[in-house]
Image (cartoon, rainbow, N blue to C red; front, side, top):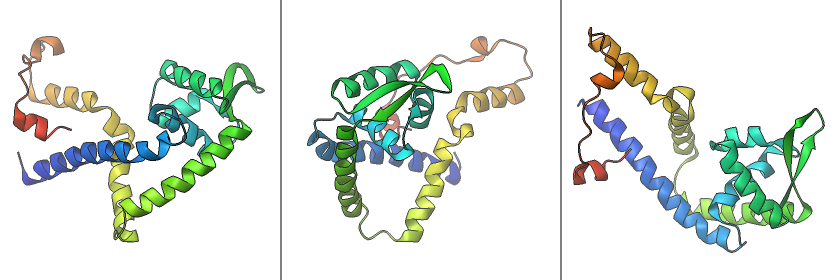
Length: 184
């Protein structure tokens, strides 16, 4: 492993740990509004995207499958924070709209999250935050979401054999404590 590979591994491992820590930290704010973290994501995202967001757009934006989003939307609608309407442009599609109560809750949540972010990122310069955002954007780019395609292409280049991909795969090994410390 090269130094660059080790650095990339450290970045991805730190990203996982930071995401978990942020989820735990923000949970305290979200729980005060009786909204689970899972429901808060589509609620806040729909608020940020504006009125009448298509369900499929919301699912794509937050990175979950449609059926998973539907379960969360059911909970948010039952809580009176959102409603689903037919899309006037396409009756087959549904849009989600925040209710008056949903807008009030998201506004209060956003205010609390502004304070929480200020505390968590205190002392970090604007230029460092901008650099961090550029790096994190690489994880959300299409190429980062399709590692299997890269692995398959690399294996094809390295192996002149015409064996199937299944035959070329090695048996999985048990994770070691070192592997767990350096999780993706």
